Length: 501
Image (cartoon, rainbow, N blue to C red):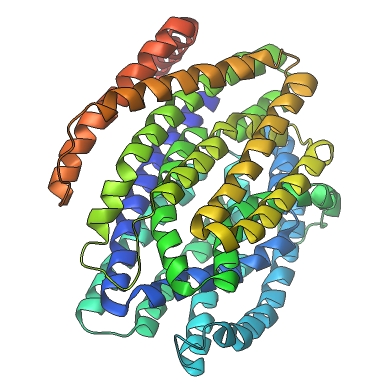
């Protein structure tokens, strides 16, 4: 059952990421072409500033998910209901606080970008963008965690696919009809408001959540231990754009957002293979299945490194020509930033490498034991980004992120090897050396290929069709040499799933 749920989550998440990447490429390009780079930068920047309310969650998501593994495994409706009610109350308090925070941002943010847009224009745009966040916190967050803990993330993935496609179609129609940016974003809010409400209704019915049950506050008592992890995750996604907004300008934010859109899409594509696995590991730990945990972790680690090596090496080789075609004809900002592109791609690759280690640490509930590393990561990210942005611009903030990612990934690997899996850290070192060798060989081969002038999506696709198979072939050959046993384990799992199906 765990394997089937994990497979369902992976397939649904994979479909979601493909849809998100495609739709995510369409919408910003339309906004830049129609309203300009400054408008696109403001939309990205406002979203990041409003995202700071996320800090109030105090890491409760991972803590609640870990607390739900055992009662879900035992079908304990009373305990599940108590945890959900405590979590729901917590998120609704955040939603109320968010209203006040939204008003502050709406009043202050226009003063930061007053050289680009009039006060009332930015003020109303901030309020519109913030509306969907309020609804998400008030109605959907607590119930979404239940689905993740029960390895049913595919349910929310399917719903997100539907709303993402509808939103993109609506944005295209509104822009073609000549609507302004406010109407376009208001249309998106109208679409996204329905998602958390539907999740709420589904979970209450599916899990028979009791309305009049005792609130279980003990389940969220570890949230302060999870705060460090929460801050580190948040700053990974938000530091760079906020630093650029404060120390550069919104056009630089637009440049950053275009490149980050690409690498973040690849990162999410990589993360789909982790969908549901954290919950599966939590289930194994709850049942004390130590041997099963170690065996499945080795497979997960192998798959994660293989996919990360293939996708991010290909991205590093393809991102510059892609952005060149994507921003063709746009002259209000310089989008040709090779150093920034390579550093940002490397940072996201390292972030993806740590997925297996992060998943098991969180599934084991070891928040307190690893929180100091999370705080250190956040500190490194902020300090280096603020210092380097003044010398290197967007490349500087990317270097700050890269250093923070590298530190935390090593910290996770060391802790997991020593305290949970009880294995040698040299296994981690070996994985990275082999991946580095594969990356070097792929780049070496591709550099000898004639590229010509990549001036259209068609030419870029033909180039990608050459580069990606090279990355796949080299990575698989290296893994076949050093990790042949892992290949056999994966084939064995697939055969078992086929027989059960």
